Image (tube, rainbow, N blue to C red):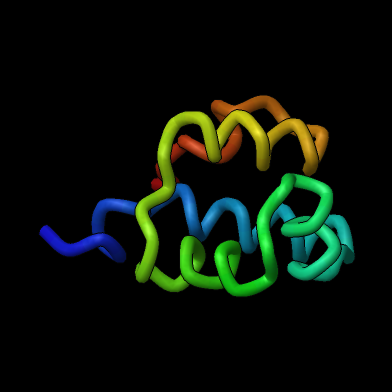
Length: 73
């Protein structure tokens, strides 16, 4: 299993919530304490999304962490 597969469905849910809220990834990255490059690497499977990252990003997006962890379908 590679990092991109491991990060799913979290990365997809993060992107979905960002789009639904009409936010910019750069803005979310900075508010969550990441550089634009670090955040982009998480979303694109080049950097592992750790549990602490999920908590930080969920708080920044003002959603429950479970929203980022849920599988569709």
